[in-house]
Length: 333
Image (cartoon, rainbow, N blue to C red):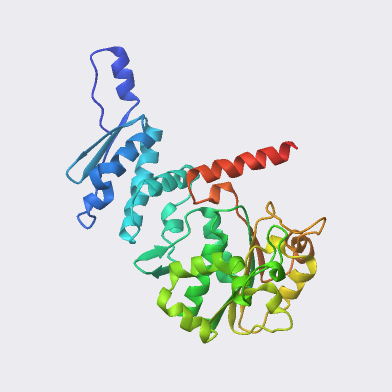
């Protein structure tokens, strides 16, 4: 600890209550990447720790201020160094997440450094503790339920885990399915061929798939059956072996449909069921199979329920505020 006495009793007291720390950024770390273009990451750190006096000279970072805040700052810099070393791109969003983890006593590098899939020049990783636990559950359970609001990565991370399993030959095919329920419409009333009718329901699954697999190879993978995308009704009567199966928008299944889907499980397969129980489009008073299933299956081994919340939303920060506002409005009714 370094302190400099002031010219008055007040400054002496303030100096005595302050710490000075100097942190060295190793030569192995590119300083421009670490501090960001135009030192944008440094500016973000200054905004995150406005009560500290932060300076950078060459590869040294100096911070002066309250010892507790200095400790938090040292923790954040240490985690950022670990993430950079693991190939994680450091930006303002990363600093926000690392700071949040550190305030909760969690090592951000253990969460954000978990690489699920590297594809097309980018890495897909969990960005919150909830997402980390969700990915871990998928890895270690045959059936996983991911329940939470829009933007929490339920489907996207499940898709990444499916592609990872296919690449590592843990399964021989991926099956993606959704119930064909949307604002009261039915397949029969939509125009066009069967494929045209199915497309609106499975389009979000294709969108995620295009992020993770070479788009030019997708038609061949679908043609050979390595990847299958179909409405839930097409699962009836089948036994799905050696497959990674994702049921998306499961809040729009009935109890009977949910049972039908879960009993399609075959040998060597894994299932992930995702949904948001606050966005049910079933007609009338039909009860959601996703709402029912937890009461029915609680306590069964090799099956895990993961709850994701507004803290796990990784879309625009405004989405988190919208989710929280709707939750507050719903609880007040």
